[in-house]
Length: 125
Image (cartoon, rainbow, N blue to C red; front, top):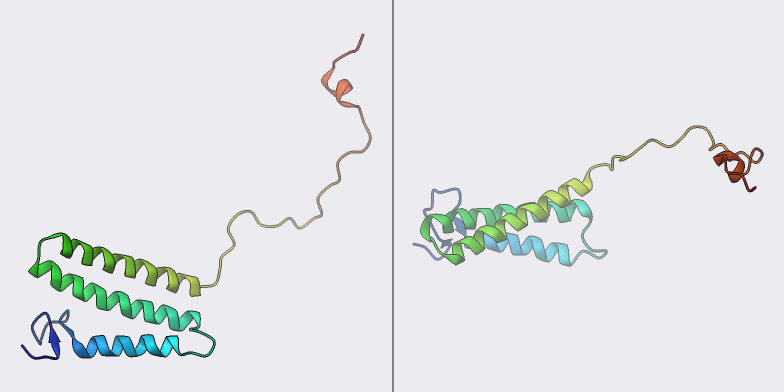
C-alpha cells in the first residue's frame, strides 16, 4: 500500500487517497479565505464534495469493520448528505406555500345592523 492511499484498492471508486483529502482541504481553505465569505452556490458545492468524500469513507469502513465506529462513520456521512441536500435546495427559487393573496381589498365589517343581543335573539326583559 502506498503512502498516497488510505484504505483500499487503487482501482476502487471508494478508495480515498491522500490527494482526495488534500484537494478537499484546499477547497475548504479557498472558501474560508473568500473576502465576503462563501456564496451559497460555493458552499453547496463544497458540502456536496464533503458528502461524497465521507460517503466513500463510510462505504469502505462498512466493508472492513462491523462495530460502533463503522456506524458512527455511516451517520457522519448521512448527516453530510443531508446538509448538502439542504444547501442545494436553498439555491432553488422559493415557491410560495399557502393560499394566494386576495386580489380585491378585504370588505370592511358591516357598520350598521343589529347589535349582538338582537342578532342572537336574546331579550332583556
